[in-house]
Length: 444
Image (tube, rainbow, N blue to C red; front, top):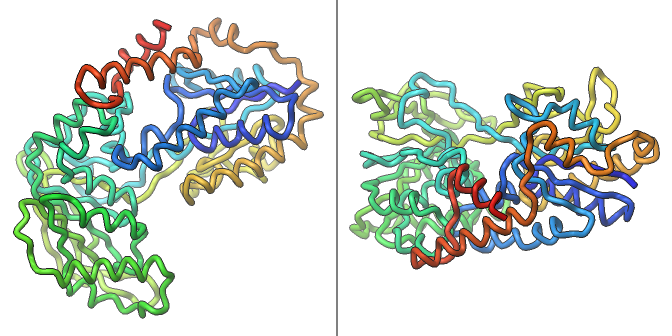
């Protein structure tokens, strides 16, 4: 028998567990997560109005309910108050770290620390009910917002800022976030990219959604489109479709809608300007194509008023105390998923997902990534299985002061969220704070 810990219950962790139990019927897997709730970014990173993507939870659930897979929530690994990596390694024959890319890239400009300047990651966590974000106040006094970035996350947060509360009410968005968005005075959102529309990374489906929002007009500057020297016929199909959508908006007469989403290109943020101790505007430098696929500054500047700035310029992995870490790539050094320490594979330690390869690909990309790691682990299994580990690590976790949330605890949270939604006259409504989540889980 081989006992494996998988740290992280998002797609990469669940796919790793799935491959392990499918390929070897002598493997038992504990999927650990610091949160009492499973599914990672599928629960806490997918926009609440994207039900089709969120439905992936059903397939992840099947993995976590497998007879040789066990969910252990509320288990923090590494860092202050967490179970040391070295201790965890002694409880299992092997450990696979699937901890994702938990932070965001910075703009690195003056004023970035001003109140009102946030990462899109933090904003997404708030409207997705992540307990770390409970109680945040993003929208008070905000009339105009700037979203820096041109990917799907930037589109998501832009859409959430202007979507009407009636459209969000049927979702599982926490009530506090729904109330804040309903009371919001945001009338204008600028989604800004430093390069041209041909280099934008949003998908056409996500882009088109912006044009379907009631009471909201999408504005595209014809001059921005004219600046891009790329021949549309030389572009991949998705970029050509994106340009078609953008051209359509640029040619469309004003509808007189009360809210505006302005898609801007060839603008690079250079400073966040203060007003009354918080963000009041963003200063941009106009950029121009440099002929090599990038952009260069022109020395011309403009300021965009904004009381809220959300940067969406990419995720980044963070070091986990006790594991090696490569700062430039934001990943754990590895060879085919085997963690590398001091130039050599470390027996029994593995990685999968974004912490292995960086924040790239879509949810499905985690399947082959996990498969490669599992193949390495199972090749090492004969040697790993000789180690003496506890028959059940849970008593050792409890002895270390960690009381895991078992699957029944998660089911209790699910029931409580359904009951809360019924009381509010909605569907399922997520619980959003640590105290409530843990109290409900322990009640089971």
